[in-house]
Length: 205
Image 1 (cartoon, rainbow, N blue to C red):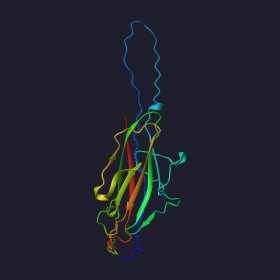
Image 2 (cartoon, one colour):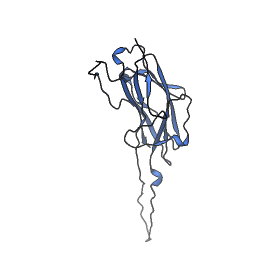
Image 3 (cartoon, helix red, strand yellow):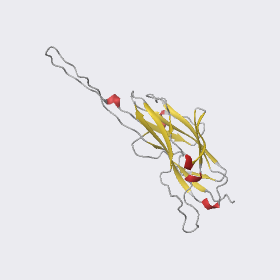
Image 4 (cartoon, one colour):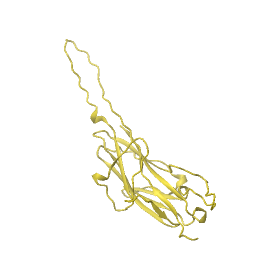
């Protein structure tokens, strides 16, 4: 097995957010006549998730690191130049990802899915005959504060991670992630690549 030609992997961070605004008005019966003025301010009822990440196992997010999310997937560069990472069979990439409840006061239940945003299945390079897609060959470990949530799970067996306790306003989750390429990945995947999405979703309480 020659490792000088290695598959290239670009790591992306994707987030989802749910915006909910509203207020509750209760009906009341007045026994006397009066002018009643009701002013409803829903500006503090918004629900918002921000996210960030870095390929550094000792990294801690700063206030300036958080990126505003939106309902569609977006990328957060995990390196300064955004050039991606190169892995060889038997190697691993350690990174940290984080999601924060940026809502003024609403709590929410958080979940995480690890996805291949552009799966190519068994597609091959028409010239070399090697596979194009690397995602299905990878193995993932995810830990939350020392508690292992996914323990060396192959990509095709990944399941969603959900936290039973709500994430309060201003709180964040900081996760340690290890992505491994097993030594069993052979020359059929030379020059293969993939994008990886860490897709946070939250539903407000």
